[in-house]
Length: 159
Image 1 (cartoon, rainbow, N blue to C red):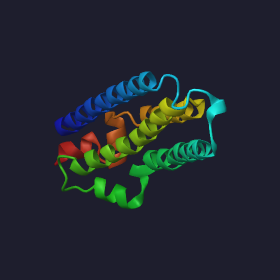
Image 2: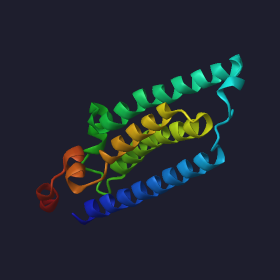
Image 3: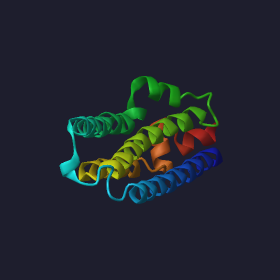
């Protein structure tokens, strides 16, 4: 039981570090590009309009692909088999899969925060908020660890 608690504590610390970095990046890019990259909308030529369109598609596309993937990651059959192996007492596979989940959601947030800082378009901030809400749904708890690994406290005490 102690290893599970250490794993959950370890993942919570990393999640808090992740949120601090996301907050720093958001403030940094909001201050750096406070007027937007272009300033006035009238000065936008065709190449910049195309660049803005591509960044819009990128930000929304990353959110549409990575958020469901991250939320469903530990439910995939192959991943679930690897995580629930009995010969992994330190839960290293679970930790690595959780880091992959954090990275997917982090990409959603960071890409959209950077694009928001550059273009000052509210679409990006909404996509970043969706990534943030999804990461809150992945907050590490003992119940989540037991559910995702299939290991209960009773089964671990019998070993």
